[in-house]
Each structure stands twice: as C-alpha cells, then as structure tokens.
Length: 333
Image (cartoon, rainbow, N blue to C red; front, side, top):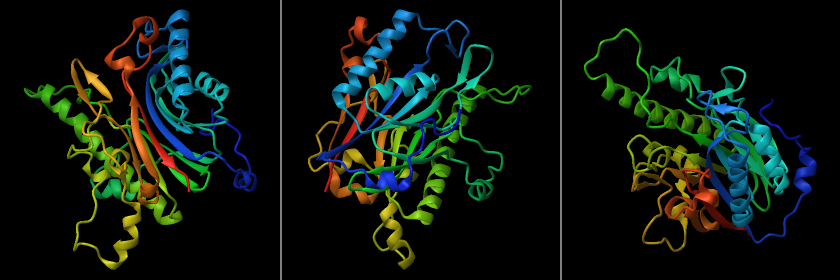
C-alpha cells in the first residue's frame, strides 16, 4: 500500500476545481481500533464480530453525514482499505495514510496509522520523517515517532494549497524499559519515558513542519490526537509565540507560521470548553486543530460531537470511539 492510496490528480486539473460552498469544515477523530474482522488489533482474540463492526461503521457514517467535514483527520486506523471505501461512499474521493499498519502475524495488527480523507484533491502525501539534524542536536540520533505523522498537500477552495498534518502523539501508557535492570522506581520511570517521548515528538514535528514551511510558505493545519493538553509543558512548544520585544527582523515573517488553537480563534469563545476524552468521570481536551495565521480571520466556530461519550446508548454507541469528533468551521472569502 502506498502512502497515497487514491490516485493523485494532475495539479492543473486540481487548480481548476471550484467550490460554491460558503464554508469549509475541518475535523479530527480518533477511531478507536478501526479494524475490520477477521483481523485483530493488539491481541489475537481482540476481533469485532460482524454485528459489532456493522455498528461501529454505521455510527461513523451517521456522524460524518451529520457534521459533513470537508477534510477529515483520522487516528487509530488498522483497516485502511475499509476506511477508504467507507469515506469514498460519503464523498471523500481523496484519501492518504502515513504508512502501513504493523501486522505481527497472519491477522493481528500491532501498530495503527493515521489517515486523511478529503473532498478536495490531495496532491502529495508522505509520512513525516524525523528531522535528523534537530534530533542529533537534542542527543536523539536514533529517535523515531511512536506513530508516523502524515503530511498531505491539499488543494482547498479559496485558500489554495495547504500543508495538512495528521498526528497521534505518544499516549500516556508507560514505555517498556530496557530488560535486565532492577530499578526501584521502574514504574515511575516508564511513565516518565512516555512523557519524554511525547514531548520529543511534539518538538521534532514542529521542526519538520517549520522546515517544510521555509521551503514553500504554504498555510499549515495540524490535526489529531495529542494525548495531552496543550497547556502541558510537553506540548507548549507547538503553540509558543515570540513575546513582544523578542522579534528580530528575520523572525517577523516567521510569525505567520505560529500555530494557534482553533478553539481560541473563534470570534465568540464559549465559557466552557468541552472535553474530547474521559478517563472515568474526568474529562480532558486531547484532540486539537491547530492553524497557521493564514486561517485566523476565517475561523467561525469550533464544536465537538460527544453524545457517545456523555450519554451513550449502547445499541448505537457501544463500538463508536472513546474520543469526541472535533470540528472547526472556516468562512471562505
């Protein structure tokens, strides 16, 4: 399977496409083990029955038809072909994945991937590579992303070409430590190792995005499951801005790249921000849509679909997702 699963249209043809829509919707959703039976995820017996799979895909269809996003970032994808077919039936004629999911034997998937479905042309797509010079500078010469981020070059109406990134940063699940070490604080260290991995992923992803932006100066959007809140010191690097008085001449243009949380760009920001994930009764905002300054005047609103989390009906939501779907609506010029 190639990184771009759908045929890439010619650039000239893509540029000729027009849209009469007054707005553009961007969404992100963690699909929670999107694995078509008889394949399994993680464990050999972790397989959806036909009825469970039907319920899961029916739920996804309903949500997408209701929200009608134009560009859709997806995480925890194992069955890429099934997802491409489902989204194609809903009008997403362009689809890309970062890489192939890892299959550890005949039917057990171990490592999911991220994907992008779009109603507008995806002209290029690739897995984001670790920027090696930056990794070396941080003493991380052998670093790798826990799940490769996806970069897709998308042709959007009115906006034009845009670099769209899909990410699923390292979870809070502890990382395994090297065997043979008898460490009294092993459990705490393994949890900290997961945090360090997530922070390094955020920093090196920002470096990769910046390097690409320096090359093409295109608008940037970053969507996905960040597995932490943006207020965390581990993720603040993604949205840090230069403070007044710190701008050097060469940095003034770079300010255009400063990524901003779509929620904070709304003309009227609601008093309470809805959670996108729950651990027991505690809600957290883990899923974000970050936008470069090109989009700042275009943001109309952001909202979530979270009924399946707050008031689930098992017959409908039992195999849906453990994350809310997050959507930002842009007003086209």
